Length: 208
Image (cartoon, helix red, strand yellow):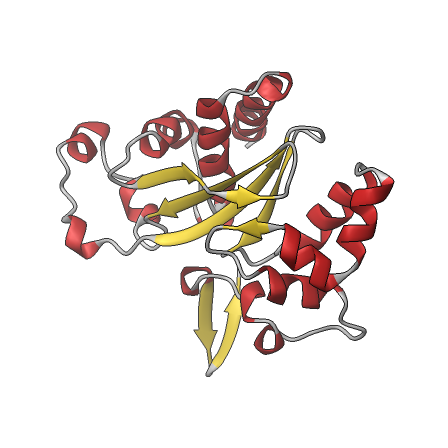
């Protein structure tokens, strides 16, 4: 287990070292890596070695940079991932995977969005994940902004006028920041994870 964990950490660290240089390929790959749900698959050495091949196969995992307005030194990435089938896909031999034994019509692609901060050299999960990190991203982005930008960020109307992310409901995310009580997912649909990260037990949804 320690060897497996070390390999996972090594993958993260080796890609993170690109933080000082804008390397789009590294950002896209690491976005995919951050999308993998490691909690529901028992990884061994063989699966760890296979993981990069799966993530680089655009049949199962695609990543693209989103159009944005306002944000500086941040890259937003959408990952379309065969989340539902991933636990099956990774167990097949590489040769079979390369032969596309899965019918594309049977694969449902879940969309996830991450923000990569070049200043912080870290990723934030802002759509599709169980633990939405937009609040952390907003805080980190704010503290590195100059005084003029801080004023824009503090006001919802000015924020929405000056900042946009393709396909992201920033109004909903901003309102969730200002909630005075602990919110439920129903209050803020933008925080709801993809259904592939949910199981229903006795009629009650649980996210993992």
